[in-house]
Image 1 (cartoon, helix red, strand yellow):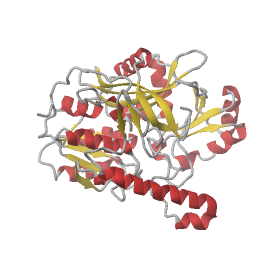
Image 2 (cartoon, one colour):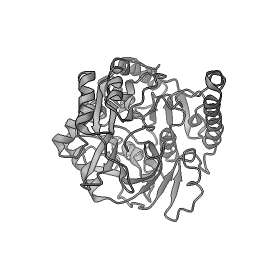
Image 3 (cartoon, rainbow, N blue to C red):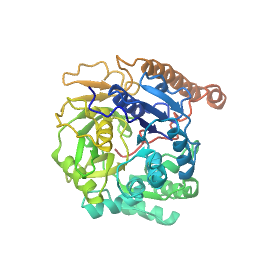
Image 4 (cartoon, rainbow, N blue to C red):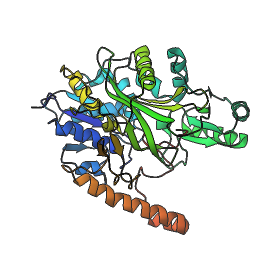
Length: 418
């Protein structure tokens, strides 16, 4: 018998068009295997997620750039197909922010954690995050917000090269602009030129002190803050391999106990009064040994299934249990367990995993998404190769996959200092 209330369906919302978002598939499988009826509001064109046996129905997503009210209209339309109020799970920052803004309009069709309407937007905004960390006494890299091209150049000199440049609201970056959410700036001239694109980016430019990478320095924490504020499910993880290497999403991660990271996560969410699923990224400073918070994502991280304990509890199941009034079982962590994204780390998927491993795409009980991903990934890689070798003509012939370009990173593909 399932621990979850299978009378209550779940709706996953993803506004981002990236077809390689394995976190959405993880949420589909986690809830579907527990007997929950799962609906997905996301782009289904070529999406491997749509091939999962655990998807009850795919629904058309909001149009790119949709307002919060337009997203509300889409979700209300989905609710018309449901027999009971559903647990709503935003899978990207834009969705989480929109849901917060229209929370009142979503009732009574959806169940949501009780927290301030603007909190998701506050923690996801990179400029606001620096102030949040200061108020909670959580280490954060020195961050400056220039107000002119000249100030951008001066701030780079003040911080010392190289410097991390971030757009404060990366979900507003226009597709096809070539702008990345985060990048490494190596000259004052580069910072000045980047600032001049502020209007195009749609949010403020931040310049941040660079914390050099190194062994065991990149960490993350996934958790669920329940109705009382207690952090349940999830845990700390160590990034063993990133894609792109040293500067991107977690291609291989390991569940690794870390009391310091755990304490920082609990302090921050407690100080904020945060409720719901969250995903934090940290980097340890090689000189001070302190863990600096780099990102606060108010939704499940793409590799949240790493933290499925011995009873199968993960942050998404914890959300469903808590919102339906069911108790969360006592935890039995599985330290040493690994998570591998096969298309980014194929060799790691073949190595022995004595402490257990979960693959992002392949699953013995749900083979369709893995097969679809392999075909889509081969097409994507072939298109990129033709683009690089053949110039503009070949690029047009390659038929690039929407959402899969390197110029427009998604929430789980960040070219950052991590």
